Structure formats: structure tokens, C-alpha cells
Picture 1 (cartoon, one colour):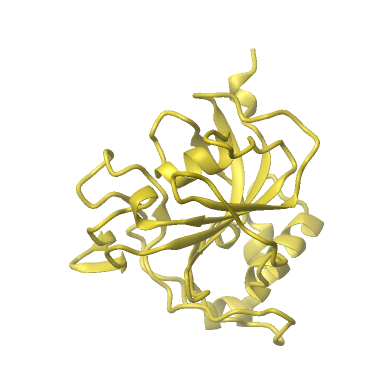
Picture 2: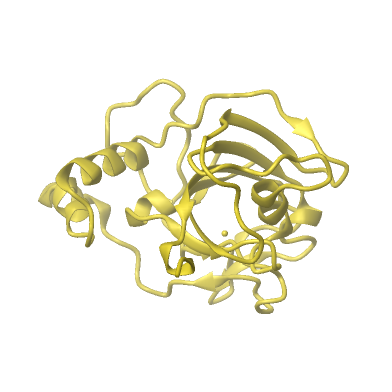
Length: 215
């Protein structure tokens, strides 16, 4: 199933370095395409102009978000504060995981669409993608190889990894063999956003199960 901009707020505790804007990556399976990703080819947003016009206006323009939701999303994204640290456990596959908050809702149904917010980083903490930038969660199908293996296992569970529950927040450390492997990914016009053999760190917020699944 990010994140990508320059920080525009006063530094906060645990703030992390943020990379220069690059094309958005959908964390898709390697079977989707040779480049292993779905790219948004729109030109990068001029963040200085956005800031001058008011970040609230940008966030509030997203359909379905109240001013309060937009403000919370803006703060959460632009502050880019990492989830609290937690002690990773490791599955036999090499996936590292730990729960920041367990959640109290349903488990993710195999093969169904779910909504997640995420921030994706390299091992050094540099953000390369985030759903918070787009002010809405990512809808993805879980358990059928539509996303990288580390996200399927990290959200759906398996091999000793407990399934996530709606409302849960989990940190995942995804080794290259469960991510994009020995080839670069996120490639656009010869520039690849993710280097070969990269270990990725995802902060996952399991928002809900996509309502379109329900009859």
C-alpha cells in the first residue's frame, strides 16, 4: 500500500529530515510493472507558494475534510514527526514490526480494500512518500500481492506477525527481499526514487475497511 517536502513549521521533537519532492509512489508489488510502482507524473508543488497562500486552504480543498480534519492533517504531515519508537520484533521472513497502538476494530479481511495512512522512510529516516501529503488515506487491496510483500505481511499478519486491527498504528521495517529487491524502484525519466536493495520503514495507520466492500 508515505512521503517528500521541505518542512514548513517550527522544528518539533523527533522531527526528521525530509527529502526534496519526487514523484509519488504507490507501494505496489513488483508484478505490477517493470518499474514496480505507480507514479503520479504531475509536476511538483511549489511549496513556498502553497505556504504563502495558506496551508489550511490547500488541505481544506480536499473533498470530505472539515477544517479541523484538514488542520490536523496539515500539522501531522508538515511537522513530519515520526511515530514514537518501539522495540521491533522480527518474523522469520526478516520483517520487523512493533505496535505503537494496537487498535480495537476488525482485522483486515484477506483480499479486501482497506484505507491506511502511511509515511515511508529509508533506513536513515529520510521520508520518500506519505499519504498525509495528499490529505487522504491510501485505499489498497490486502493479501493478494497488490502491494509489496512486507506490507501484506505487516498488515494482514502471518508467520508469527499478528494481524493489524482497525485503529491500530504499526511500525514496519521491511528488508529488500520483502520490498523492491535488487533493482531500483519509483523510476521516472531515468530518475529512481528508491535505490536497489533498500530497507524501508513504514509507519502504518489502519484507518478503516473500505466501505465499498460492504453490501
